[in-house]
Amino acid sequence: MILRIFSSLAVALTLLQSVASGQTVPPAFGGAALTHDTAGSRLFAAVFIVRGSVSGSATGGYGVYVRGERDTDWTRISRSSMLTFGLALFDNGRTRRYYVAAGNGVHRSTDGGVTWRILTSWRTEEILCVVPDPVDSSVIYAATPFGVFKTTDDGTTWERKMEGIPTWFIQRIVMDVRDRRTLYAATETDVFKSNDAGEHWHGMGTGAGQVLALLQVPGHPDVMIAAGELKGVRRTSDGGKTWSPVRGLDSSTVYTFRASRTGADIYAAGWKTGIWRSTDEGVSWQQVWSAPGIEAIYSLFVYPGDPDHVLAGTVGQGIMESLDRGATWRYAGMNGAQVKQIELYP
Image (cartoon, rainbow, N blue to C red; front, top):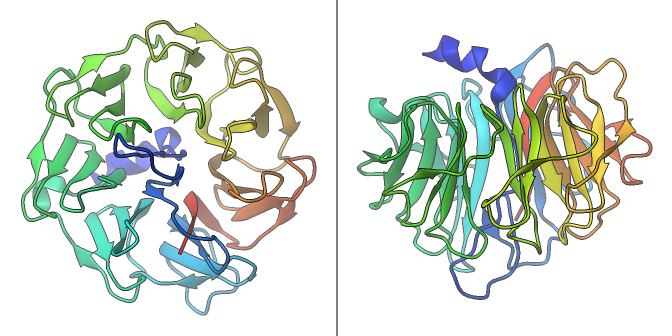
């Protein structure tokens, strides 16, 4: 099955996951509500594989790397053998837990990455995405090649939740910003929605086919954007009742979306696409960087306090950085790394 994971690199996803409890809570980034000043936070990078050395690190290997928000060197804080697909954070102001979606299960750290514990068994290995409930730390969702899995006892037991989804391979799970019981699953055939915390699912009819990336636009939760592998990018402005093609990205293979805190800027990137930006909630797109020599971009990140500051995680060329909303770019470390996700966490 690991070989199937490697073959699915072209359909791996990175996106902004905004979550909320159904009450009024601060905006969320990467799966956790930011209740703190981001000053002093660290950049986390999920590295799936390395072609050569990792810039600024005494040791190589794939896994989870961190650096200070304004540092230039990266340090690995996970095992060197952790095939890392994604990151997530639970932080309610009292408890902070870091999660990693990895090739051998869901990993959790409660001490800032010093030590890690695997929460899953052989039935839930090869995790493509992990989504902790933002209120109840005992509830965690995982997207896998075998379906959607859920635990309600902090990882002691897991159950497959696939009623209504006809195919097993789940690329990504996204939690609705308005209601933590509302989930979206990106699959090989469509986006499926659950209104009851994953117990039942129904197709949304995106028309995108195999969904590679999915974004709920910050500040406008009824607006969602889905990228299909062969059928272009589709958009809804009515919460998924109707979907239509966007302008500018009709046939591009997009792997990732990322939005600024307010949703005023949305970025997209993928296989030999360069980087595109939309300033009208995804209706139309313009290329801001052709990314010469870069094979693919798997991840994007926009600093929550500085929408001009954008990072791009590439396939093999590490991380690129822009300080002017994508007009110009410079190298930002992680040479040789395939960077699956970038987040700013405390």
